[in-house]
Amino acid sequence: MATDYSHGVVYTPAASPRATTLPLDQLNAASYPYVRLQWVDLVNNIRCRVIPTSYFKKLLQSPRPGVGVAKVSMGLVYLMTAAGFSASGEYLYVPDLSTIRICTYAPGEVCVMGWFQEKTPIARADKTLSVDVALCPRRTLQRVVQQASNAGVDFLVGFESEFILLKSTTPVEASNHHSWTATNGFPSGSVEATVLREIANGIQACGIELQMYHAEAAPGQYEMVTGPLSPLEATDALVHTREIITNTAAKHGLRATFAPRIFMNSAGSSAHTHISIHSQNYQKTADKLSPPEASFLASVLANLPALTALTLPIPASYKRMADGVWSGGTYVNWGTENREAPIRLTNATSPSSRNFEIRFVDGTANPYLALAGILGAGFAGIRDKAELTIQDCPGPRTAAQMTEEERLALGITHRMALTWEESRQNLHDNSLLRDTVLGAELTEKYLSVNQTLADALNLDGDDETASLTRLVEFY
Image (cartoon, rainbow, N blue to C red; front, side, top):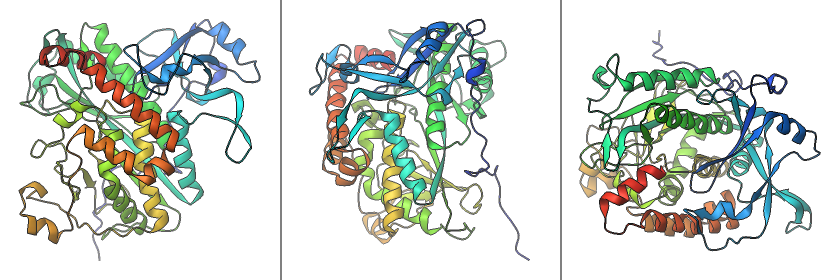
């Protein structure tokens, strides 16, 4: 009789708990006098308008509720305007009322995400009129997920949020020093213990499942792990989790930064993204990947050198992506429980909890665009029945430690983009991501704003101390 080695909590798209949000009928000015209407721009700034609840409810009576937002805001970085944007034009930002969530860090406030729309419909290529905005990150992710769902493929996504608590940004100084996952990271009575407990309580109080938190390897570094949800819900929850982290830290005089790697003698910070694939047409087994899982993996690997323009979007991101520092390494490969591969297969023999950990994502990426790129590339592989030709690299030796002949035997033939410039060029040249997943307009505007962001982060030139301060204050 076969022994069942399944493990882990079982989540499925049909039975997975939804993130609990605040029902509209409970939104009243007495308990919640203000509403934060939030969005995430192309460089991963969380922006908002704070609206009195009394006025917000008046807006909801409009045939098209929303507030005006200057189109140029999508192309602004440090008041530097990216090429292709101008001072003219305004979007209507329409609240998505299914996302109302209490702001545990700001008593009496709630936040709500939304969709960008054109104020006046514009003609598409097929002559039909539309208010959809190509530059809306949430809408882009929603479109990708809906295309997959229409084909019988669903995803669940969970995030790990790594961050560093700083007691000073000038100079950059961590709040403390501790060992990886050790209790000396948050001793009783310390400000770190207080901050982490308040963050954990805040995440759960606003309806997001918290699975665990612990001390990470770098000075002042910690991680919050939230449970899997549908892709759009998971990303909304991630944005809210980050707001809880940064605002709670600020309340106690600390700066929480998601910058990729600020101490070069220790580990960097990431936004590891766990993705499970669920198909109506295939049953998962313990002995091997299902055809949709294998094809998803094959296509993400094939497009990985271009995906990093979305997932590792700034020059500083490439200080984290290196061989031998537990970041996923620099070779395009995957491995069972291998943290030195950019894609780690975890819970491999437990089909009910098996998922891919995408390790080439950091906290500077716009999570909607990063996830849209990954899921869009993966679904294209499922749709086209892409063949997985790269073999499992489970270790103990990593791809970087192998000889060229050993790598070739496993089908490992490409490196990831090793620089920001290379990633950008790869995205520009990748027809699947450029023309199908993101669309030409979004790709062009994203690359333009991404260049302006790099210029803004480099305003201090060769002054590494000032540049680091600018980085941690921006992210």
